[in-house]
Length: 245
Length: 162
Image (cartoon, rainbow over all chains, first blue to last red; front, top):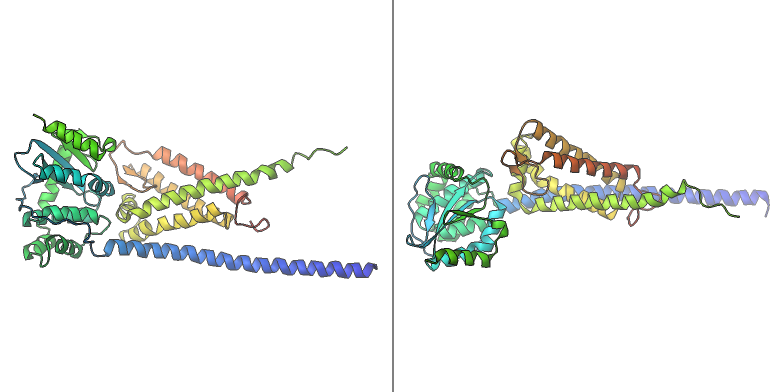
């Protein structure tokens, strides 16, 4: 092979290699653009997804509407359910926007409802509102619902839909599910006028007085229960032990 | 007799493994942190609001968008795609988090950083700013390593492309 032919061959190879490298760089730039666009779309879609999750209408499926007695709303006093003569008192401090409270309800709501139905406990609900404006609106609407006589199913619905914003229209929509249509006009007014705003404040004060600094907090006959160390069976046992004369 | 391989080669042997480890740690932390914040949209906004750093209209886009950015960067780092660019972006994000936490501490706020979901006000004395800052500095150091040594094992990036 002559010198010049070898040169031509190596030049040819070099040109080929450069072309391939340029091709790879173009592909790489294209891929970078695509991946960058995917990340931007992911973030935008994520914001849209969360907007949908918080603005949609409440679910109906998880509710078990039952007849409940209208409750009189008294400043500083919780909403209480169950027989006044029940041997055990359970105090619950929760915020309707607190995710751990929603988990608590999912895990222990049935145990408490059963004990209440059996006449073993009197359940006293202190809806605190420290997370955001939605907490306050929901606590007010809860008082409106309790007063109108569908507090228990409304309470279940608030926690079953805890990711919602709790705009006034969502709070009324939930009442349509919990109470059935049409919703009493007084309820809608009570929600939009924040009729129980004073009571909501008084519950926050009562919680501070009781030394409650987080939610969910539960007291069984006045003694604080460590929820972290609890399971549904041990809660049942604790209630049964407390109910023994 | 053949001479043993010279010392300078050894760094090139183990550095890609360190980079793989750094990718998995930073990417894994970002994935977990992002996912935990996606679960609860209300807490995500409350966590941003607690810092008192951005106007109200920005609380939602940040509270809802940032977790998905973390997930996206986490996926890039874990898979080893565009490692250097992803490490630069993750590093910048961590610097922003650091500034936010340091400023919260300096202003005497009592908040949870909301780094892994949750967030918002906590009782005075319940804050853990020092731990949060140390963790972020550690992650920042790993990002710095990846910017310097983006080549790693088990990565989608090609050898010559980084």
